[in-house]
Length: 617
Image (cartoon, rainbow, N blue to C red):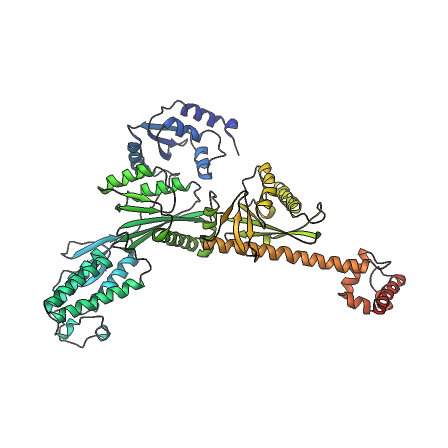
């Protein structure tokens, strides 16, 4: 990597940046062709811009790429940091710089249409026309519109057939929907027009106000009708209330505590980022959107901040925006959203309860969308993303190596290394190590040897970028704080950006927590991460102990034969290769033993003598 001291262009850019004023403003980065490649805002221009042109080691990959392409920059001074934020949003929308987060608002809009006719219908529409109809929307999700239209028609029994009323009244038998209680059937000719109009008005109220508001209003009207002894009308309202309540029970997300809000969460993995937005109104989920970015963004608070600024230049601002983590410039953003809305808007980061569960659901949906876009399983994407957050990593650990030591009372020391890529085992990258420098029961010493050898292999093969030539994002040791403390100095001395943690088991040998060197990180609240770490710990233990059993078995067999006079390692190997088992060797005749490569009659007779001695004992 080119450092600041080696790059004359960076030195010159930093020299110019150090002359900037300590005032709020917007800075504009341009490339050698004078194209704008990045726009940002700063509380103090000198401090912010000069950071780009110092050491590059602390920057995210995206920032390093941007800095490499900067030829010159310009700036605009503003009176306040808030004015800088507003100007930044305007300039980004105008110029769409390459290295800013850019959201494509290419979704078509959809409407719910209540037709303008004697017997109105409720249908979906792709655009609002000047035809006298009532249009609700716009909505970005066609699925949401279809679902809402379907719900309203079923609950309030609005016809969905192709008949035209009043033209077709009394001209045919009612369809199946009437028989199963899903249509008022004006076609029968017995339905009063005011009853139909009442159903349309209630459906419109439901679509505008949401489930909870509609239920409350219908209950009030039902009680009024009952008091006026209008029992038939009260019964119709009761049936609609029950239908609404039944639908409410089926909804996945119902929030009585917050009537209107947007929930924003992101998931990362497989070289991309997905940002999901849940939009709530009237206590129910009425719309959702996903935005896919073809990069992993390390600075999540900055990512959330940039997304919120851009998203709400395209959408209406709700009274509350709930996000899944810290947001840069939180107070400034709240001021920006409040002024755009015309009323107070608040950004919240829930830590527990109903809101936290909603955020988690939003994040899981983001992970699933990302997984589908990248052709991967959603659960593994969510688990890797969740593990990265839990461990405080800058990005999800796509490439994980895990190590375990296995021996029998200090004998036959071996180690196993397994690899999980994007949350799934990569068995082609599994490796086995026979411990060479450590004798006796010394798991820490054995682990130090293995990790040292692994780091040396990386230096020898790093140009290949596969196998040992690929650097892990995360190493998980099968052990607690002691293992982490024993290995951390090796990782730090290497200067390689590898995260290191241990996997702690409970008294029943089940995964309990993550060891972070001086503390433990509980996994109990992170189900997906817990499942992933448990799977890794079980797999590395299985792989290491299987190798140990195989090595130990060979050791026992070899020692049994090599204790016989005239049988060394080479002859023992040939005998096992020929006869397969110790029992078959002992049961073979002297002549049969002599047929084995490298054997002579004296050695064969010694084997038979050993068998007779064992039988005598």
